Length: 241
Image (tube, rainbow, N blue to C red):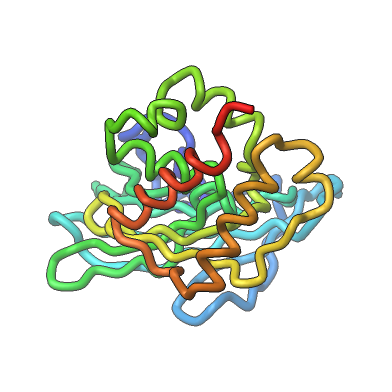
């Protein structure tokens, strides 16, 4: 329960949590069958509050990174969200607090997985959306044909014209020591989902480009590959009528 009390969404470093007082009488703890290597529990409000799904909290120790213990957390408060956090801890006298966050997200909005430390380097993956793919590609170049993608005005407009919800996992971005290194198009059966193409102006065009990459087995993209994908999107989808 102590780790569940960390202020993961607040300002870091967070306040200290006293490990001698981890009880919480407002919730009822139950057993959770977590994934291999994870430790956790399910819980419910003692007053019987309504939840869409079973609330849970689980974590695993990743290793020591820059002299601090690093843990990976998965949690849900009972809504639709499935939250992940990769954080460094500081240990005190009968106390613990979060001091640094390396990654956090909810499903396709940065949901984190495969956190590991290899050779002193921190590696982890994050699920991202169609809009995220274009945003990553547009920030890597200042060429004129991508101004409409990377410029502030167009980026704001794209948020309303390209799907970016937590249920639209289009790719997995691979990170090392806080910097993304490559991207995998992770939805081989990507299709025109009902409601998306009607609501988002550029979605059908993006979908067509995405499927063309998958059909040519161009699903593993480095930095230059992501830039080329964003440029192809700009050329194909953002052309003036």
